[in-house]
Amino acid sequence: MTYEAVIGLEVHVQLKTRSKMFTRAAAGYGHPENTLTDPVVLALPGTLPVMNKDALDKIIKAGLLLGCEIAPVCKWDRKNYFYPDSPKNYQISQYDQPICKGGSVEIELPGPARNIMGEHKSVALTRIHLEEDVGKLNHGDGASLVDFNRAGTPLMEIVSEPVIRSADEAFAYLTALKTVMIYGGISDCDMEKGQLRCDANISIRPVGQAALGTKVELKNLNSFSFVRDGIAHEIRRQTAVLESGGKIVQETRDYDGQTGTSQSLRSKEMAHDYRYFPDPDLMPVEVDQRWKDSIRATCPELPFDRQRRLQAEYGIPYTITSVLVPDRDLGDYFEEAARLSGKAQAAGNWITNDLLRELGAAKKSLSESKVKPVHVAGLVKLVEEGTILSNAAKEVFVDMFNTGDLPEAVVARRGLKAETNLEDLERWCAEAIAANPKSVADYKGGKESALNAFKGPVMRQAKGKADPKRVDETLRRLLAG
Image 1 (tube, rainbow, N blue to C red):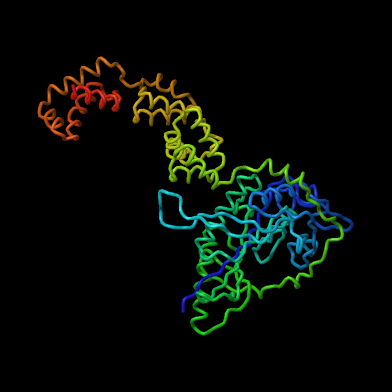
Image 2 (image 1 turned 135 degrees about the vertical axis):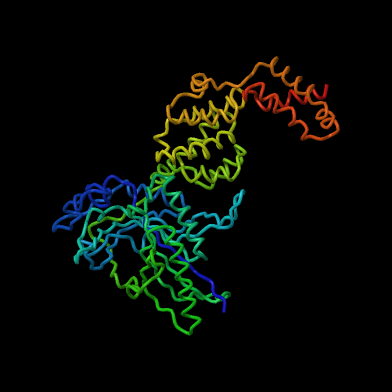
């Protein structure tokens, strides 16, 4: 029997705020253990929560970017469970009235390497709700210690509909979602810092069957690659169970990305197990049209919309836009360089090839680069005007990267200007033609490659500083005369 997978993802995204969700205690990462705490975080008696408006602004922005319906009223609920990382023994969350409903994430379907934009799909969302993060358990030396630095950090849970059909689609979904969150300044989505975490709900069913199979939740998927590998592993595991006559049990499993294996953690909880009830210390939140409009005004162009626009507006290929678009700052950098130079594809080539290569080798970020859009634009113009040749331009770029000098200054300092004396070029071309009568006959007989026989002698005379384009044009004109 042939089975198909049905996958839904629950993605937790830490919001990029200075303070925590219900207190002024600072939010952050990498600080000494238990230093980002206060009486509210530690749930000391008598403390009361106060909402962080910046967190509310950011989840509304996420909802608007993803096409969600923003609820006019949302409320806060207590999700009750007892675990060492939750000092209150409950989590403030949203249950039946989340702030964002519906929406979707546009993804590019996986496929072989290609030079054009592939097929796209919208992955429907169920909801996005806001809650507080929990602390972190550190295990070792026969003991487990709790660090509450993370506790109370604003956390969005983005829940997809079960419409993802493969591990590769799940990878594409996470990639697209992360890009949107970073574009909007909502989160940095650094998985190593716990800013983005993912749980996968996976079931399989016979192809053609409408009813869903029994789902299994997979946890501890701490990289996009582990999400993809873990889902693929779980699909294989469930298929093997069914094919051997067994039955899938609804449970939560732990996936080990290092070994590629999983093990059962516990039976899956139901909503009633958490005994949700409205939080008595927090008022419901009303989101009016003015609030939504003020947030909408700050929303950036979505990544795939930008990619389509760059291809249409600048005529640059998918191979360039697919590198530029995932990084909003790099896309902005390109658009400035394209505007200054008037040659978008040439600017895109320098940025995606040379700039990114040098940044990678130097282990620097774009903001640390001495090469600014004006440098790229200036270099493009020098090449287009024939002032320098392409091989010299490569030297100029590396020099600019190291020194920050403008390209004109580098060319003058290093004597890299191409030979532009038209009288000399005319003479060298005429001498090459006179010295090669056979090649002249071949060219005039229709053999296009014969033109190359003249170019070598001309470039030797010019000591490599003649513009190949001008050499070609001059030779063709003299041979036609």
